[in-house]
Amino acid sequence: MNDKQGGLTVLNRYALVSRHNPVVTEFAPDSPLSVGNGEFVFTADPTGLQTFAADYEANMPLCTMAHWGWHTTPPRDGRRIEPQAYRLTEYETYGRLVGYATGRDGQEEEYHWLRQNPHRLHLGRIGLAISRPEGAPATRFDLAAVRQTLDLWRGMLESRFTVDGELVHVRTCCHPTRDLLGVFINSPLFLQERLAVSFAFPYGSPEKTAAAWGEEDRHRTEIISAGGHKVTLLRVVDATTYFVTLAFSGAQVKRQGKHCLLLTAQPGREQIEFTVEFTPSQPRVPLPTFTETAVAAATSWESFWSNGGLVELARSRDPRALELERRVVLSQYLTAIQCGGSLPPAETGLTCNSWYGKFHLEMHWWHAVHFAYWNRIDFLERSLWWYQLILPQAQKLAQSQGYTGARWPKMVGPEGWDSPSPIGPLLIWQQPHPIYYAELCYRAQPSRQTLERYRELVFQTAEFLASYAVYEQTRDRYVLGPPVIPAQECHRPESTLN
Image (cartoon, rainbow, N blue to C red; front, side, top):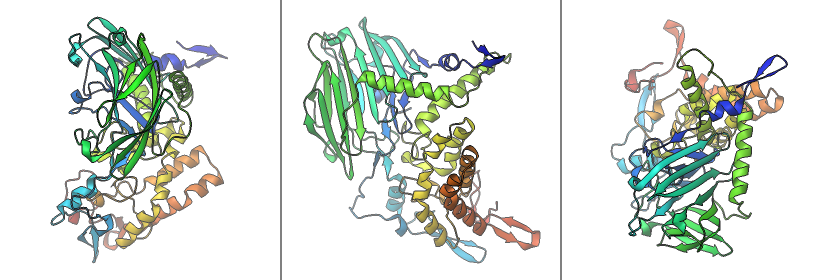
């Protein structure tokens, strides 16, 4: 329903968003739901946690990821592999040879190591430990009456199911400004000592799951403080260190193995709640309660939906309209949690590791430009600082190939080194994007300050584009390449133009 104010129709934003709340009534390993804030994402099965993660690994893994959470696997022989030392393949371009990191003959180990490192890290699996009456672990086929709803307006994942006729109710939410999860669980199974919460931590992996379970001796999980319903862990995974802080109520915690904690209800309690935060440095401020986290999430999401653009199509006569409206709403939610953070997102955001969790800069356009058109320019600007951070490396890349300005990498991690590939280094389509980003920022904020902020980014990008194009005098035109790889990614770079 819409209201009338002064003869104008006022959009009922709550009704529009809420009618598209996703509802899950069965286990579907290719489509789990996530909560997040752009910097941190937690993906769950229908229990509201990562209880049956093994059943999802082949489809869409259940991961806990943050933009700062990267891992590098040490090379097998212990020697340091430097990206700038990778042997380049030379291509002839208008009378001179230009080197690109496209070959791997004789440097197979370096090729794969540079492509796979660094990779995003699964920070920890949080799931329910459910037992059957005879003591055997429950499987997902032992769950009945499954109903999970993602409340988009409040950012709350509400999950209900039964085990042997006993109800389990789980509420899961993400703090809007901290890498922190809030969870509330209520069930008579606590009284029967058949329900607990497991916190398990893996070694890193470049694979889709971002985790290597079973590698217990290759990483460390240390309890550095405990007491007062709070536990802080130090995680050491090769050169990566981070902290996990757990605060709980109505529960008690015990260690279970080298890399696992078990949270159980206090005797006589049917419910527990906890918050857990993941941080790259030791936390200095107290954790909020579950209720405080839920209120913060709801306030943030209400503000998100109440501002910026929305499209209502429900009253259209076209039978496709409501489905299009649904896709618009869900896309806005997904891109807000997956693509609105401080780094360009991977193609699967912070859900799991596609391309080892690295981002592809031509895809940054698709992931983030829409924010400007929905009047949410701040979501786009959050990641633009990174181009300024790696600008010196982009300038060095251009200079090494005989060009001026800044040549932006293609498949890349936060450090800014272009990953070797027979295709990626020869692509050119991502190069003009920073100019377009800056233009969108200026349209939203037409000020001298905006011009100054992006001046160097624009000029250096344009400088490379101008130096890369070659004037073909016989046909009075400028051409791109060779060598270049076009969008089809299947033509020979040595003989491809434009």
